[in-house]
Amino acid sequence: MHFLTSIVERENHFLVTLQKMYQNNDPVVLIGAGCLANMTSEYMDRNHFRLDHVAINELYLSPGQTLNKHPVESLEKLIQSTQKYNFIIALQYVTQELVDSLSCVKTEVLVYDPSFIGVNTDEIISYDFCEANADILHSFYDNLGDDKSRETFIAFMNQRISACPKYIKDVYDEHHYFPKDIVSLSASEVFVDCGAYNGDSVNAFETALASRGFHSPEKIYAFEPDDVNYDFLCASTQAKGYCECHKAGVWREETTLYFESGKALSSKLSENVTTNSISLTTVDNVVADNKVTFIKMDVEGAELPALEGAKNCIQRCRPLLAISVYHKPDDLIKIPDYIKSIMPAYRFYLRAHHPIHAFELVLYAIPA
Image (cartoon, rainbow, N blue to C red):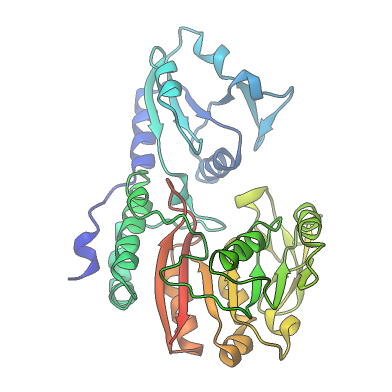
């Protein structure tokens, strides 16, 4: 059966509802001021979608607070007026209590999955995208290693097309990077953590080892370019003599790039000089001729150039790979294709590790 027969969504719920909001002409209010609200407001701004208010609960409001130059207001004060509003709820967890509190002043209330926006890309996954790339996507789908991977692929595509948070929950796997049904570990692991953040994935790796009866790994290489996160990473691993921390991102070559903007998911690497620089190295340069058994990557859309910088290591050691493939629409095309081109013997699996949204989709490449 061709994968397209299981792609049932055709329209983007966010965009369709936004058009309804503009047609009724009531003010548009974005609820939220965190990462998801940030990426939503940036998306709306760069696509010239009108946004009239940004609001959060008064309890969390700071004087002079802004979100991408939009003043952040008190939600309580906003809904005490007699004005009708259109609400876009940009929160990870949306309670019925919040939705009910808007009932007297709402015209439209939009609850959606902001992952459809992607990370560091201007493209979104649509049904047209699936049709245009049907052959290569079907080949990838058809050759996935198990039924759960194929179910995960279909759920991910339907949710990203529709921006409706209703598909991923059925395929959610809580074991981020280390699902027991496809990831085997041993007593002499050498783990390369690209995007180590504050040490959470190092700790998760060690927890996974312990759950399978193994003690400390042989070696960990942890890469994290952000100043604050790197300090946390070093603090959380300082007692682990086998953990080697590098204050750098991973790329296809050693260089310096810059952040064009942002915070969290919206930070964007660029060659344009800004005040926020980031040092980049390659896995191959750091690891050299040493053994590697497991490479994990979640590097905000830079996974492909990071893999290119690990080519020698992958060909020499054939490590297990756990690579994030949710940032850009063509991640599911270019990343598997590149891995196969340098090491054809890998078997691919997919798992979704966010309980609600179509973030945290991981491609597992398991050596034969």
